[in-house]
Amino acid sequence: MAYSSESSSQIYAEATWLQGAIVGAMFYGVVVVMSFMCWRLLWPRIRSHSTGYRKNIFFFCYVTFLFVLGTMDAAFSAEETQKTFIYNRLYPGGPSAFARISFSPPLGISLLLSNWCADLLMIWRCVVVYRDTRLHYIILGLGSLMFLTSVVTGVLWFVIMSNPHKATNGWVSIRFLFPYICVALTINIFISLLTVLRLLYHRRKMSKIFGPGHGAVYASFATIIIESAAICSISSLLYLIPFVAHNPLANAFVQILGQPQRIASLLIIYRVAEGKAWGKRCNSTTLDNGSSLQMRQMSETLPTSAAPNQLHIETHFDGESSRDGSIRQPNSRYSRESTSEADAPAGCAYESRKQNA
Image (cartoon, rainbow, N blue to C red):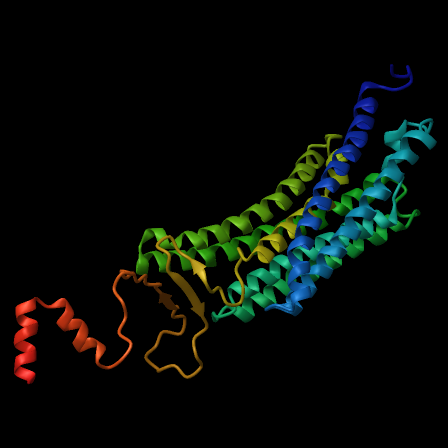
């Protein structure tokens, strides 16, 4: 039962803040599960010092860092919810009014670091895909510029939120969150689009050489990128659209912006650990006919007539051989003659011995 001093709009705003905290806790459960799945794949490889030992160490630390950020986000989000709805429930304007002016620096740091980690991972994957092309340095420079823009807007938002004199109204600080989320969304969509276009280009080349069925592996790579980009993009749009429409529903989605970023990054690392993602050398990819596909970079000493962006492919077919176990193999150099005589008809064997005599 609502108090008589609270309007229906205030009650709706309070409900959005509370539901956002609950949904954020649900997303944290996904982060926990994905983190343990990545650790389960990476730790045996680290212990065995298998191929890519340093990369596995890096991914293990990366997953641990994301798990710590997700745990910090969930813990401080619960603390802010408790502070809003229990300790300050009688604040003028209700708990929703207090939530607008309340700010937790750990939550802001967790959101920024999660977004930056996700952006760096997407840019790195795109650079790896374009590694053997002339656009490599262009992609690297463009990605660095976009990441720098994200850092500048994020730091500006954090500084304004941390200053109580400038952020007297909670919506002032949240308004500065809007351009930062727009920059992060642009990076996510643009970098993912570049990566998918490159993968589809390889799929088209492979389909021309081996047939339509043999380009499915690149479609699988593209699906991984699209899945991860969709998680980040949808979560950002769920906040941006209600915010532009001045709908209090944005209060719910602003609390879960960090967790989908971590889930998307963990999903990519899990696919990389499984060996289902694109690496610097995409090799030993099993095709439908049982052959082995290996891609490698072109040698620097290529003929001048070779195309600069030519795709080199090696295909190995594993042949199968069978034999009759009832036939004994020869044990000496005379065995072939004796075997041939034994297998020949009796008359032929007699004539052969007669001629030899």
